[in-house]
Length: 136
Image (cartoon, rainbow, N blue to C red; front, side):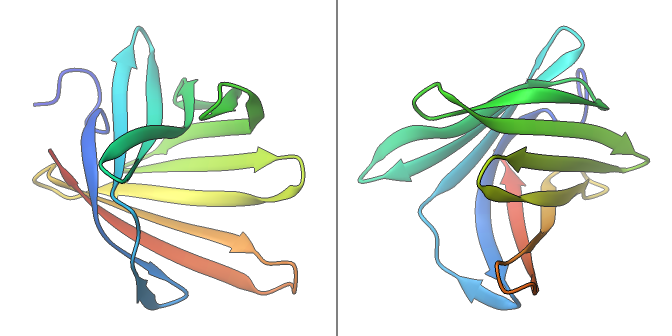
C-alpha cells in the first residue's frame, strides 16, 4: 500500500503526553521521505505561522549511526533507526544531552503514528513521552 515504507509520509502531531500529563506544543510535523534505500526525517516546528526545521537526518533502517543536523545545519548528534517487526526504534544521542530511545508504531490502517520515548533526567528518573501523529 505504501510506496517505499509505511513510515514514509507527512505526520502532524495531534497530542502529546509528557510524564503521563497532556502537554501543549507548537504545531509539529514529522516529514519522512524516501531517498534510495534511506528515509529522510525532518522535524518541523511551526512558530508564529512560520515553519522551521528543528532537526533532520537521513537513515538506513539497519541501526547504523547517522549524523543529525539542527535547524542551523550544524551537527548535533547521531540517530540510529531500525525496524523491529511492526515497530521502528530510534536512538538519538548527542554531546551534553542524555540518549533518547524512541519506539514508533503505525496503526493497522496506516493513518496514525504513535511515538513513545524514554529519557533519563539529570535526577536519574526516567521521563516517558508519548506523541500521537496523524498522517496528512
